[in-house]
Image (tube, rainbow over all chains, first blue to last red; front, side, top):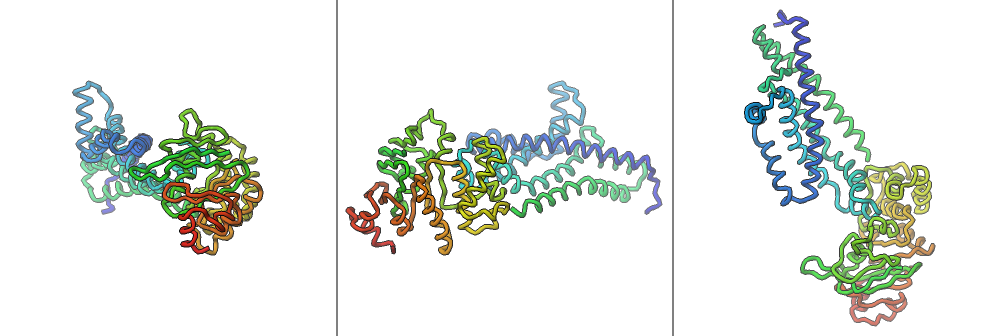
Length: 217
Length: 241
């Protein structure tokens, strides 16, 4: 099994794939989280009836398999709108919206977990809505939402494997290319898995660290 | 001066305040007693504009609380309120709980706010708990912290909404002592309470609320000694004094 044809050039090729996975994930999680916070606050603030159209769109993003969203949106941009966007752009747009749809729910849940009486106490001290949101709701909701958010970010990292359909050569696609050439699927998948672990683990540990730090409150 | 004029307030079909008139002068301590659902707590939350009212008006130092043109956030700076549930900000230390509003709302420097915070916390007997998180405090300590938090805004008026009702019996005394101390220092206070002995001790006037109406108001000697109103007498005989 360890008598392999894998060269250091191939390893660098895999590492580049891992870099692409990280890039797509980082962009999508950052944009998706910002959008998710905005959508989540809007949903909480205007109530379920007025937020229905927004909820509907977000439900679509959550319900349709990512693979289908990627193919359809890529075809839509390319054939209908006539934009020849690079696959990376399309991948980041789709994954960002996908992330934001899940993140909006996490944010809404986090805000709802802050007791109304605590917020009333903040307002009774003369704090404005914005001050209450920044000083009280944001830190408390973050503590509640963090574990779910870490789970979401790790999930997006793995789901990003699907962006190969829009011609983005990320980690899994790089592995498949090597498998086709070297015919060593199990060994290469083992290495691919190790790469995924290496880029996921710091995030998981960071989440654990924050939870521990906040547990003294 | 707090002037409450013919205030009415309903929650859906239920009218909880049926035309309340009450004037509280500077330096006065007024306690409100009455059964649950009599509207006493609702009145307090109306005074600092946390609850809207249906009709009538409430003036604080001549400013109408519920007028559209009133900056209610500014008005709340001079009306401190402490609730039955102490509502500590759990992510902040005791000192940070107290300094947050002075810094963010009044724009005070950290040093100045901490100076005031330490002073107020020492005043309520928590000078040794500055860097502790609220979850490590007892209920009575958290409630005293909430009082210090309100006092740090240097309010002209303090409203207390059943501040001892959620406390274990052995912790009630320390919080009531804090309120008494404030009363003796001349703070203008409206206290909703079930502690009759406290009401008798500290009040200039005691108001008895019954089903959304202020059935009787007078000095404590009158309310507890020679109540004029049938409902007041019934209520007082039903609670152990």
